[in-house]
Image (cartoon, rainbow, N blue to C red):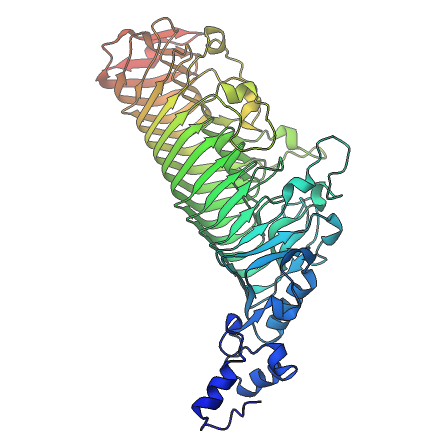
Length: 563
């Protein structure tokens, strides 16, 4: 053994000792074959690298041959690292088959470029964490099993250019009622990464492939950074990309996500969240908000493509609140939707004769959005087909308050959207739109091709352009029971044979300025309902319209003033 107190070491002796060092595990980490039990003794004697040592999982018995189960070896390396005040657990080149592994405080799991952690195809190798509760609330109602999980831990990092492969196809059954090859299904399936009540989490630069469930699930955590991740999961119907629950101070950047279900779901009270410089594709939603209190959230500089559900979907149930949320600099190409905000039905949520507290949605902004909306097609590279609802085939931007619920202060600035068209006169004639604020498609085919807004107070449309790829008989914009709206610089296409370009129903206190009618129409604005009043049209180019306004369903001609 080298004497750490002997400062005068000959060059020959030093090189001899170094010849026995495993360089793959760090300069000061000697292999067990060289020093046997003296490996830890040497490290403890110097103490200079405490908390910074490297623990190669091969030194703990891992084979990496793609066949041998290496769960125990990986867990042993993590445990040793955690016990010695942290450091780096190294996954070197090789394919290491594992079941459930627990990551612990102060541990960095580094997966080398040619290293892969391969989730076992045997469902018996996975187990739930006793530290992660299951309940019906917003904590872990979807399951508490992870391929790699951490609970009540701090200072965790997963990094490297390697791969975590969940073999998710082994957890999908081709026949309903029959267990899949892995032998487990439902909430017993493992997530790629599962974090519960952790603080200071970093996951960066790794590839997450074919999860059996969601790829990254973060529950009740704080100070989370997810950077440069490559996520591919189209083998299970609910392959989510990111799924956040009740977490704060989270930052997602430079990630590429292609998944089958929600790409970035935020449930519970998610606050102080940024998502930037990412690309997303999915069958369902990209940004999915559901329940709880979501506030102080900024999404910017993202590309959304081939998304055949609804890229931005907010479902605010009674008792929930969504506030101060910004979406800016987004490009959406080949999507359906593309935006749906629903404020839940209060009466339907009453229990024991008590009416639930109404939900709140306010201060939501959309800035510099360019979107091409299409009719849905099969999701590329998905291993199974999807059926589409009529509301997905004929979609539009929907702001949907139900009963006495009002969305407040919703703004669209520099938003340009091209829609596929194809809407019929029968679809345009619908006035009784179902009062449902659930999934975006449940209201059926919206009667507008561009924007349908119901029960909104404080709506701003500034420099919004609505066009269609093929003729559509539906109005470009419908305001139904909207108060205090500013429509400035709206440019829209319509049809000469359509009823009108715009339709306002029981809507009041609206200023329309700098309106541009892009194609010939019979009527610019049809006003309906006796509660419609104080609507002003100030300037713009209406030269392609036969009439500026018409009135129906009890609306008074004095409700509109044309300057």
